[in-house]
Image (tube, rainbow, N blue to C red):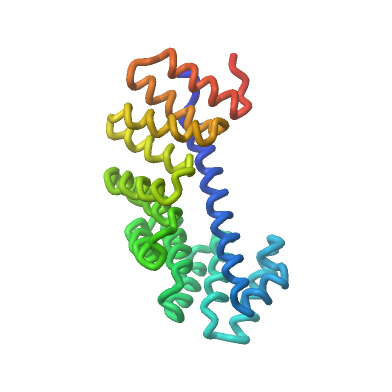
Length: 240
């Protein structure tokens, strides 16, 4: 085949980064609901990407009010984006101790556990986040990734299916569910999911890549080559 699978994986990683950035924006938006959060946003530390200033801002907020669960949660996010998952987990855990109903802290801690390769702990936190926010499609999407990493394909498919039910316009969820169908040898279902992902986003190169591979597994080399060539075109890779 003409296209390396690694190309698809690198594109998916970029999509995952966008999803995490979107989640950060969501958390910052939630912070506006409380006075400390508004103060922290106005200081512009995290909003401008100045991590050291952001940490200092959150330190000051916590000094002023050591019972502020949002400040611990937001500082944890800053540690996460700085790659310090141990400190992030400590702050998320304190936020949860202060407010066991703070679903975003469970979600954020789950992501940090996942970054450390602690999939079972990540799943446990996603379980609690989902219990608190059962209509959040992203939580099912993220937990599905943990099940997939553990090789629990049926559970991963179930979570991707729920994410799709809650957000039927998520081309990434269709693509990842399709990739698991393909891993299970059900290329017809895989192709149907890739078809839907491409219908939702005709510029999504990853879906063309995986559909091309599924066509190849089904013995349809002509359609496989067409899809892989389209994926390369979308990624700006000249086709010889």
